[in-house]
Length: 119
Image (cartoon, rainbow, N blue to C red; front, side):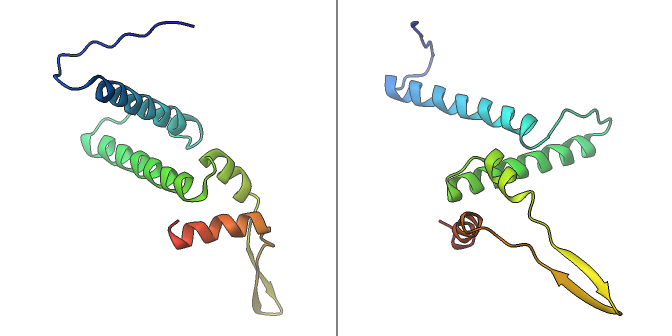
């Protein structure tokens, strides 16, 4: 057990200082998630447009993954692990294209319903 102190030059209530620190923790957690779960590794771009494009994609992925977590109630890591095996395929049989869809387990159907309903 330890003691943690906060120092600020802002004239705000103590509770707000602590809340801001907790938000910082969420940002740090998000960056760790981007590096691991989203596979967003540092890349070395030379041009500003490429750097900005990369950051835009990474932050869009972060926003989408946070939305998935909020709506489904499961971590993005668990969500990806659950849906990754689901695959569909198109097979050509006697010049006819047949779509083969995966069997979607009930727990996955429930997650997808939460996503489509926005809750």
